[in-house]
Image (cartoon, rainbow, N blue to C red; front, side, top):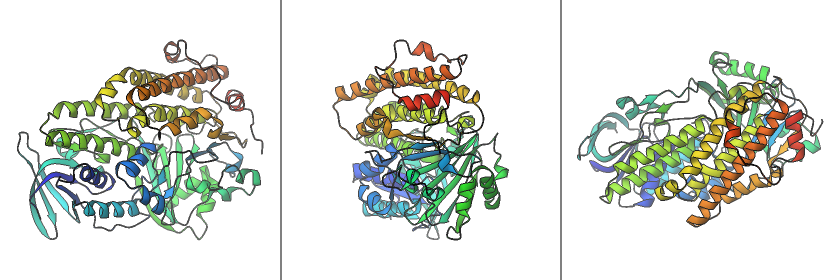
Length: 545
């Protein structure tokens, strides 16, 4: 057992084990140590939340870490995201549904976190990582010169001391280095969550036996989606797990739905009976026995620094946004990729401190752009007119700019990032204006969702599916830069169309500077089908029950 490691990783959860595997795949000669408090193997199903992946995280696990076969055979292929605007309604099938009728081409998965982390533990050991589960870190002395860092930890009944060239904190919310260095930072997004797992698959198709409603999806497997039940100030998740359980959670704006109204299973079920009674009735079936129950107050936070002098933070040890849109694995992928680049530069004898600063600026920029999607936006979540448009906008921003950077292997390409700097700054400016416009539009609408049975199929938007397909396509630098420029033009055209719809509904709505950013913007053809646009503008029925 060596007393020195090139990289010591504090925490053997999703972030730490992924980083260890990525480091060894890139440089098998690296000595990597992982210290994890929990003993392995861990429990399946009721282990950790964060089960849903989206395109960056899915690409990271499948391609960067080479785990596609495991994902295809041992996890659940995701049927996209799906939203029901069903607050207070007994029959979600009579409410607005937003989603896809067929899966898009770029795959994502629902992860049983226990099963996945057990598999990752096996993989890192097979790659030569010194993975010590049941280990407790007692202290870290960070070197401020060229010397090694020093760690003290307990393992197998003994105290150990180890030196490490690099130390990475992947300890989750324990935030060992973040606490030691005083790096915690509030971000102004005050939300809480409760979650639990039940036995058996909770199938949304059980909400209706209407053949037309059942036939909306091919195959008829809504249960594979990350299903969101949305209402003012909250959303409820439904995520299937490959072990045969279902993950449920309630995520709320703390100002609108206090944690004390749902912080026990009995209270959460009573809350569901008020807000999502159809789901509550499904969960009361005997076959859905309770497996666990947890809650978390104030889950979102920032961090003042994530990359330092041969130390780094990754995953929830650094920062965390919100489970809506499932960005947790995305930010693990980005942080871990930057850490691998920094370790490689230092081992090659190249200056790494300037790159650490640049990568940190980029990481925080991505974080700040995404934070705007959530902060102060929860009151809008129950609006069946505006929230579907917000989802389209947010995903166009994600699939059009950030996801292509990662999926093309260019997230750490400083030359390309410099070339695209103006494009990303323009997109951030559009998003900063769009989010308050959507918020104020929703605030002026009637408070209750419509029970009109509308079906908003994203396959009716060819440009939206094309953005997703492009994530799997390869391009040289010039073609890639041209694609990102075209995606910005698409984002501008979408912004112009949303502004027109908002003004048609509320002529006096302030544009928050959006109009000034859109001079000359517009598409040759409308981006939204006529039926969608009419429903958003006039709240007419698309598919009356």
